[in-house]
Length: 116
Image 1 (cartoon, helix red, strand yellow):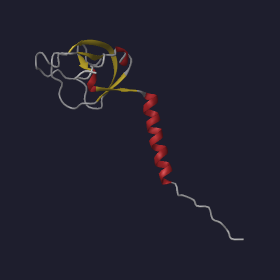
Image 2 (cartoon, helix red, strand yellow; image 1 turned 90 degrees about the horizontal axis):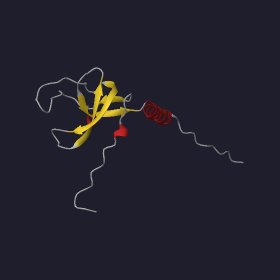
Image 3 (cartoon, helix red, strand yellow; image 1 turned 60 degrees about the vertical axis):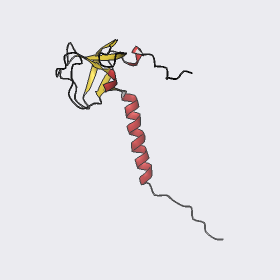
Image 4 (cartoon, one colour; image 1 turned 45 degrees about the vertical axis):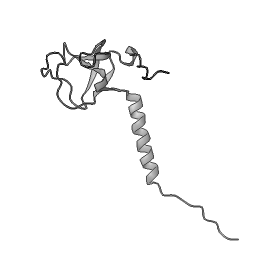
């Protein structure tokens, strides 16, 4: 074990074309090279991924995963600014939360013993 933690290998299988991506950052999208406002997804906006690329980030200098969307042709965005929407998992989490709330609202019944 070294002094510095080992960097995780980039997993391009984590994102695939057709995945749903929800934007988890708020603010303007600025091109790292030109420093110009490029426009992009807004906070909580969900889009279908159309392309996945692994390229060097001009800001961080490391290889990262980039996502492309039909609504923003010719642009790619850092995948770390998005959450993969997993409909089955998201529905399960919502169902578990609703079930927990329902249980908490139930009155507790205590057994009553009748003396002989």
